[in-house]
Image 1 (cartoon, one colour):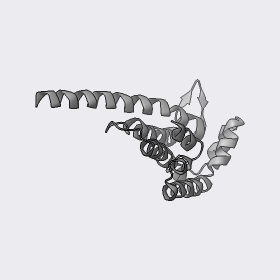
Image 2 (tube, one colour):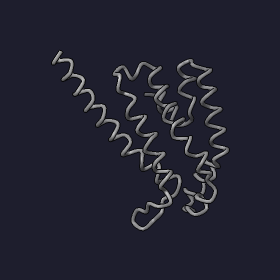
Image 3 (cartoon, one colour):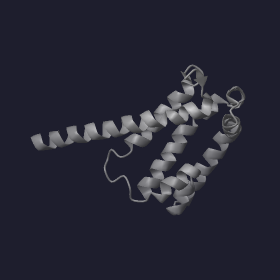
Length: 153
């Protein structure tokens, strides 16, 4: 679990804790390149100041859309290398978080909650919730179906 939390803090740190230095360096480089090209830290800064318009203007969405995949894959990889993910479908919540956060990025300018646009940082963060739920439900459903199929054979 510690590896996931370090990967949340910064992609690549979980890999370093697992002794996977080449992967860690790769994730850190990818995170830095995407972060800088997307102006992500500036968008986060303006979002937390409540300047959603400025955050939207600052963010380079084309680059920012790469971030969820790297971010959630780094978490999954650190978790897996630390001995987690023994079940073959454990990756599903991580993958569906990457998908749903990317969808949140694509639609952040069109979706309002309580008549407020949450911008390119907060709306995608909220989209983690359906990603986890869909991933967990699929994992449960597929596990059930695979068990039924095994019992029939």
